[in-house]
Length: 89
Image (cartoon, rainbow, N blue to C red):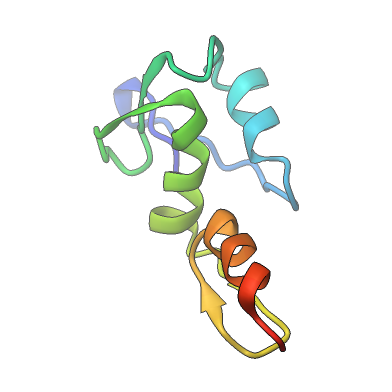
């Protein structure tokens, strides 16, 4: 969960592709895609471009997986898209 000072945390339910909106509106992570932001999920502390932060949270903290019709599993949406370009499944 996203951490705040004094041990408070965010417990909102995220649905579908709502994570970028949630981070922007609730946690005020705004700016250009190239701006830097800290991941505060369970005190992770790693820093990313805003454009990469959602991918990091989905992959490392939420465990979201993306599946191809051929049965292959990917931790990132862009990797699945690249796979599908050459997949016959």
